[in-house]
Image 1 (cartoon, one colour):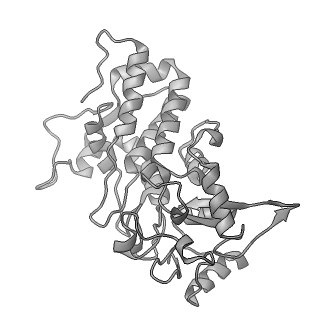
Image 2 (cartoon, one colour; image 1 turned 90 degrees about the vertical axis):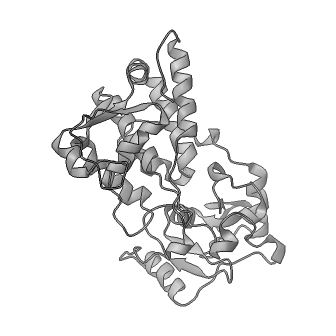
Image 3 (tube, one colour; image 1 turned 180 degrees about the vertical axis):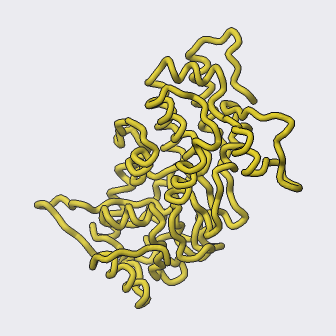
Amino acid sequence: MTIDAGPSSGDEVASSFLSALDRMGIYVSPSGHRAVHKPLLVLLMLARVQQLRRVRASFDEIEEPLEHLIAEFGRTSATRHRAHYPFWYLKSDGFWTVDSDDALDFREGKSEPKVTALRKLGVTGGFSEPVGSRLLSDDGLIRDAAMRVLRNAFPETRYLDVINAVGLQLSVELAATRRDSAFRREVLRAYNARCGVCGYSGRLGLQPVGIEAAHIRWVCFGGPNELPNGIALCSLHHKLFDAGVFTVSSSNRRLLVSPHFDGADPVTAWLVNAAASKGCLIAPLRVHEHPGESFPGLARKRSVRLRSSVGTPTEAAREG
């Protein structure tokens, strides 16, 4: 479906665009990994509209920055994922068009063109005319669209990282996201307000400080606000968990750290060494409050869901 201007008002174009972003197809690999390549492309293009007032770009312009973003936030395996996949296939979501001609050379047996053809012919892609015009006339729509993409594709702990990487000027209101205070209370109670990885349990008076309730399966991917879908983590390990630095085996709660994770500081070394020495998650005392295996993908892959992009302890342990 393509979003057409027709007799509709600007608000109807904006509404259709935002709805299309909600329905935007995200590739899921046979092993269950979600690729956020399309969301990254949309965010990058929204930043270009905001900064350059341009709603289209040639593949040459977009290829390198998009590949950097995919490597940082969207890679789902050790294989290089090229920018031409989202650049070409975003057409199917109704708000993106690609200019091409009969000279475009397609990959043998595939429905996408060769990368060399996209470069050689200077193929351009971008927001469709009605959507592009609406974005140029309304900075508020840029913000609404960006927040819609962020909420649908990334955890809160990654919002600022993604925003800064794509170059968006955007103030994020985390209070408007789908957090559940009862979920946080239950998770912190079960874990005695202590990080399940490092044991940190700092308090300011009676109030825990720097301890958060992390979702195993993100809410935006159907994860419930229920105790078995939660782990208490300090702010640092929550962000590392969402970034794909480590996961937890659901068969024995062992920490599994990505082989791509490295650093010269003692905190990084501690996490790597803890995994190497078969360190385990500090789970609640009550077995029924342990991280659950009943959610899609957990029992099959025998690991608590590893959510993001950069590193993978094992391909079987990752889901997005």
